[in-house]
Length: 352
Ligand code: NCD
Image (cartoon, rainbow, N blue to C red):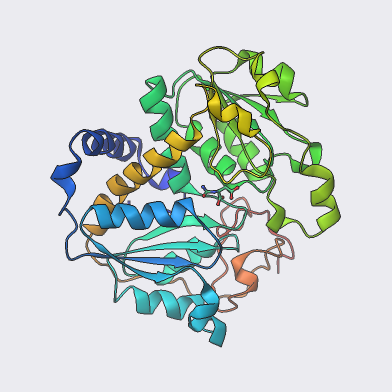
């Protein structure tokens, strides 16, 4: 592992080592108080965040390290037109690891091209969010003993929900996982995530009715409809309350089913559900800080490297208008052999 752009950057062995470290930190927090003393995390948040930013920053501080960065890009040189490349090259000289959240898909990979320190993707547009996935897997492993064989329901915004995309990519690694997708047809999974699941042989079922889906699940992962990704506010208004988990719906679920949510919620989990012992989303958020401590321990100790930026050649224009390549025009076009943009994973168009 050099950067964490999405979960597949970790080998299964690295994930298992992170998990063991996570358990050890929970058991012996005092042993880690000075583990990163003198080290610095750069926390570059170009988009709002509560849990991810605060948990990363708290994780660094609990390890004895320091944090620099911004949570409001208008207060940084971004507002003067500084490119992502310049910001990252400069910050690599100040920090031992760089966490970045950005509204555009592919921004974390773009940052990694120019970084000489490890980049942690803290969420890139509607694309992926691997530290949330570490949180989700750690929570499931701790509370359920493992991931293999789990029946996982995912409900809400499967199209723009980056936590869903990264979680599904990770579930592909485990044995016998089955997935039930509950969403409005307009908010169904993007093709790249669906393909990854099909390739891994994950059994996928689609359900329109949450009440009939919950009966056969070990975990229900609820998500917010991502208002900020909609071009048309009326479309958001039409879809936002399609699925709401209530205590009444939970009556149809097993006594051991976990209710998870990356948070924030925007009405899709009724607050009365908080009192039910199956609701573990606040515990999930707490554990997220601890798994991020385990991650930072690994990332900060990596040696510096010289980034090798591919040459810019004319080749493609990504069909995704929100791809980072449309904002940062100097980026080299990158596509895989199947014609998929490596920054944001959309199928390329306008091949030249
Ligand atoms: C998620 C995100 O930012 O993608 N939140 C988080 O990181 N815990 C989910 C969301 O915003 O809906």
